[in-house]
Length: 301
Image (cartoon, rainbow, N blue to C red; front, side, top):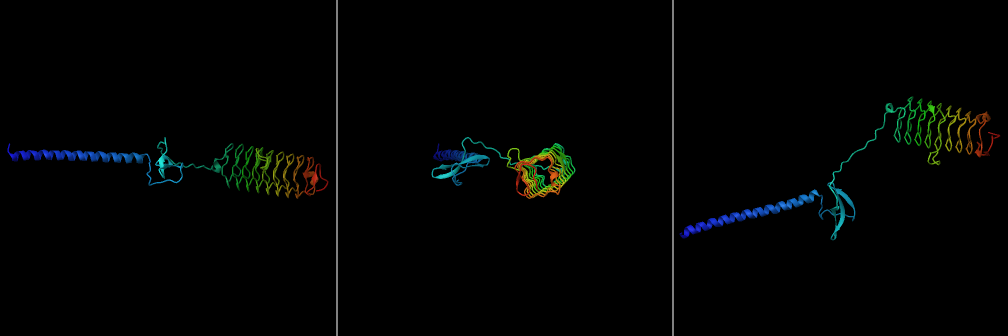
């Protein structure tokens, strides 16, 4: 074999070796690149953060990309790390909307607990046996409504119109009826007592209008009727123990057979025939209109 042919064969073999080596190097580079990419992908999918995103308070937690993280100390730095045992979750934010019923949706027996019914017009509607503890009826119109056994315990009825409402056995325990209009309402045997669990929470009837209202047999124990107008109202056989009727207009109102123990009538206005208004009433430590205390029928108005 001549020298030229040997040189040609050697060159071909070197070329093959170089080509193979290039392929090997490319394969190595590809493999390393893939490994690096995979590593970053895994870190990203886990929500891991680098030291470039430090945290402030050790032990603080937060959710990053759906994964719980905790602020930990790494060397002399503080940074976010995936919490031990944490699993990636998807957080869905939902909005809860409380639907306020329309007036035409409120029927006998409806549950209106804690509903905001400010200014609603329920005039003339049948609300018997409905339940509305802690509901807000501020400035609502319930005039002429049928309210038999309506539960309004701790409800707010400030400025509400209940004029001409009928029924009975209502529950106003702890309710706020300041400035409410109950004129000519017929709500016998209703309960205007203090809150059932806290007798310091009085029923608020301050400046309420009870003109010609029929509330016979009702309970007003601890109720505050300061400045109320109850002209010609029927309050016979009521429980007025510890009730406050300061500066109330009680002209011709009937308190016959009422229990007036510890009631306060300071500054109240009575009719000219006041004795008949209190016929058969029970007195005991009762503060009369002039501020004196009586345990029997007073001898002067």
